[in-house]
Length: 413
Image (tube, rainbow, N blue to C red):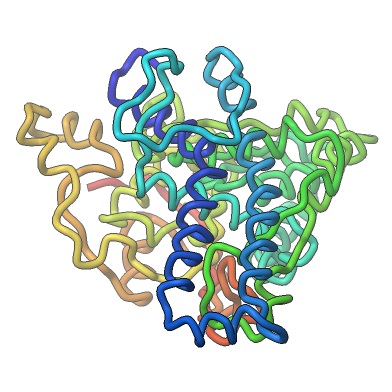
């Protein structure tokens, strides 16, 4: 919080959860009512009547928004506590003006469209990670990782698996790291997004019971629904109570589940490249993560540093390069005085200048170049969506690859 840029980023995230209710009501239903009544009168009168009852649909969407807002405002309250800020009473009518009220707390800011969308995405992602209905996606993505870990450490007794240290970069909402901890391992999640950090902290540490919240994941969009019931699907989250499950998973274990799970909020390519992290982990597990790198070599160098010799890197995911066609990231920071050479380059982390998109065979060749031996490989390992509505008329599918690569030797450039 001492860094002005970081503090502003945190405030924007907290404010986006605070404003979720008001912004969603305005952008999702209010604007549609305006568009509805802008049609010729005979047209909107037709659609206002049964069996269409479009105005009734908007009322139902408004009620669903209020349910989702309970989650957003819970994220806000535990987020304020997490960042050691005073609690607040969430208002049903927060300001959307371009200038904040002088009496508002410092984190209250004008509405921001980008962070509004990120808040909606985070709430929607609860479907994938923390609802019973999201289990098929979790099984497709997390199942191979858990199977590979259990195969790798088959000879280790359940009681002693807590001494095996697993790192999960891109931990997101925390479900994979939670499942690894429940399986008996020591696990550290790492996440860069403050939206994900605030949300995962609440789910893992702030919930009181399974099914605590009603979630309507598909109300933010109106396209490709077969029925209004599909759009208004209600699920409950979390599907399990994390604290209860970790307590149960601690029976007979040498290390309690609460002590086996930790979380770091930092740039993966900065923290885990440091000397303090060298050879600290027995395994690294990445799911839908490596394609978030502008330059995959920086990720590989980081794993080389933090993984023990003989340790395994388990990966599941596609190569949907997030920075494809974007201008080089980080160059502006270099122009602002970041020092030249390796030290300055390391300090940039994921924001360093330059980007490249590789094919799968090129990724495997890079692994070998940096001292890994690919011991298991399957492409595709299955088919899965990513936070997808299974009843939608448009449901893009991934055919991700799966590999287990063992670090044979420490190789650098």
